[in-house]
Length: 124
Image 1 (cartoon, rainbow, N blue to C red):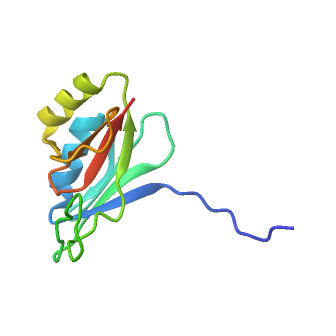
Image 2 (cartoon, one colour):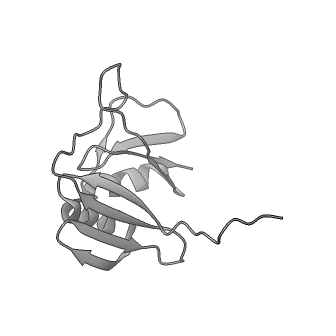
Image 3 (cartoon, rainbow, N blue to C red):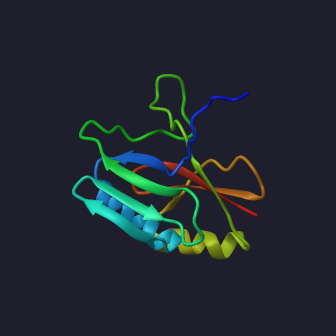
């Protein structure tokens, strides 16, 4: 019998030099609502429910490098975002403030960098 307590993942948290600025980018990108905001902490909610995204300010934040070489700050994690049309979604991401990464490892995936340097993937 499993004696594990009930647990639920409510959010993925991304660090940055400015949580409020990074949350604004993801709000523009995804259209999600802010459900909690204070200086240095913002939480966005997915409209269909499930885990949201949170952002926290880290004064010693170091922008990750992607793809990283030995000794570079690693990305640690990234977001995968399914889309219906890569070109349309990529154009929207750039208008929201993302930058298309130089290195693209797959034909049917587009890697972008958010304003804090976190990679995220748009895929079909």
